[in-house]
Length: 530
Image (cartoon, rainbow, N blue to C red; front, top):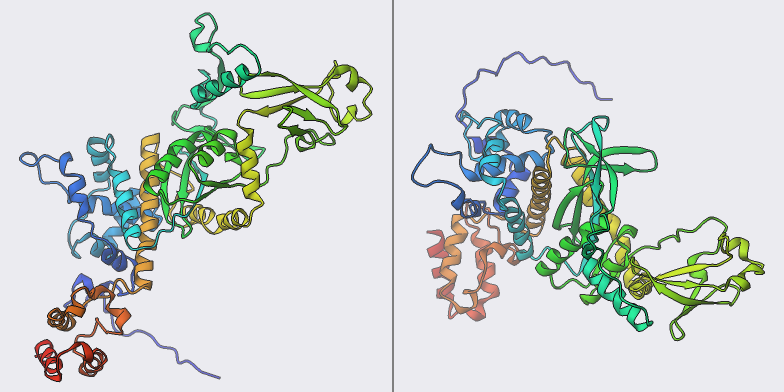
């Protein structure tokens, strides 16, 4: 049994004077030290060069500091800019990261907001900062974009759902309307039908409208249905990541915009940046004919889950009706033929049964409830792409890739909400939400980049002794392409303040066949040490 004696601190060290630098107060293993060594933030100066006046006005806050402040906020999940400034004032690690001393005055919490309104609101500076951090991860060899995972998560808006008005808005046409109409008219022509006339050309037909609930506090957010009963005003962050959890791209939309609508732009951007993509993993919300067409036409595969047929309970499922491609007809479970009737404006072919046959069918009660005893089965003109997705779903590669979603995109969303304060937002407006999302994901990529570089020995500090030793080795051809940042792979200690003579001797002995003589070895050591 260990007995501990009660001890009381007899001295008050609060007013003790010590000679210290702010660098002495930051732990050597602090994440901000790793981040500071993993990337050079001076690239921000080039990005903002055109946003400042060079010969007029008051001196500004350092632009690098201006962007590091929100990075600190989102990196550590601080709830607001006001609280972030308070934390920076008392946290020596934050001050060290920003380049401030222990007594330097920290910018006011409104500084970033004012600069955003006056300089950054109409610029793509946040996208370029995100891309530059991602580029550093790509250069380090950490990004594996052979498989990409795309999904969306909601961010609760700063708006009361009771403060809203109902508005009548026009129903927007599908963003792929022209491509769909071309395919529909081509299909109708093959079946001897007249092409459809575009409704936009008919001035007498009024545009369709729908009723939408709009927030009076933040009109740009949308009413999001979370489950069957809960509703809230929110935004949705549509995100793509790789197999290692690095975020490759993102976009933000109101909460009432369906996931499939935002897929096009995000997929195009990610595909242009990472053409090595082989397969894309998506959830069931993205399993639509248009999205599957885009993926397979681009030469990639789509890994999707099983999607439950949306039919009445107790009735035949859609897969019970078999499509005969040769005769272009549908075979029902009772082996009766449903013939082609027409192709509607939504892009679906309609196959209809013979009412006289269905009237006496023993399975009619679990097939159709129509009054004229006629069964109608629809098939999209791009249904073949859905069938390709089903083939991939059953393949080993499709199964393996989809199982990685919980370790990649789902973990990204979990970390963003639990550790980086992305569950809610205090910002209002789509542009500010996109800024928050980009900086949050940039901070997450930055943290992973720093940790992976440290894990792989890419953040090792080079001592003066080793630097001199390395310079001497440049006289020999074998070492001209030697990277001192990878010296840890050679078993060399780069952090040592004093030269390790024994280690240098062993190292030179190992490569003695590459040196002209022992005299060369001694000369290298003498020049490095003395």
